[in-house]
Image 1 (tube, rainbow, N blue to C red):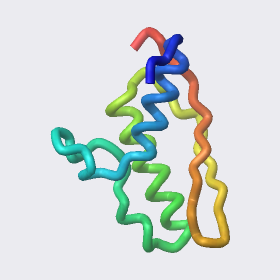
Image 2 (cartoon, rainbow, N blue to C red):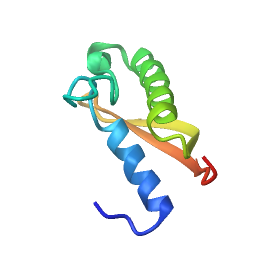
Image 3 (cartoon, rainbow, N blue to C red):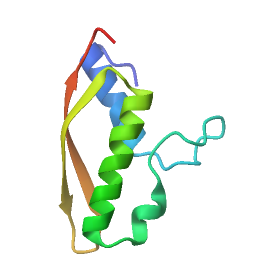
Length: 91
C-alpha cells in the first residue's frame, strides 16, 4: 500500500480502479467499473468493459495511458482484463 516509485503507484491505482465495482465507494459512487456486464455475452462484455476501463482510468488516474486491453477467460465465464499501460509523469 506504500509504493516506492511513481510507476508502482500508478499501477496500483489502475489495479484499484479496475477491480472496484461502481457504487461500492460511499463518497464516490461513480468510482470503478460498472458491474452490469456480468450477464452479457462475452463479446459484448469485453466491449463494454473496455469502454468502462478506458473512461475510469482516464478520469481517476490521468498519469496512466492505456495502450491496449486484452481479455483472458475461464470456463466459468469470468473475464480477466490484461492492460498494457504507459506512464505519463508530466500529468
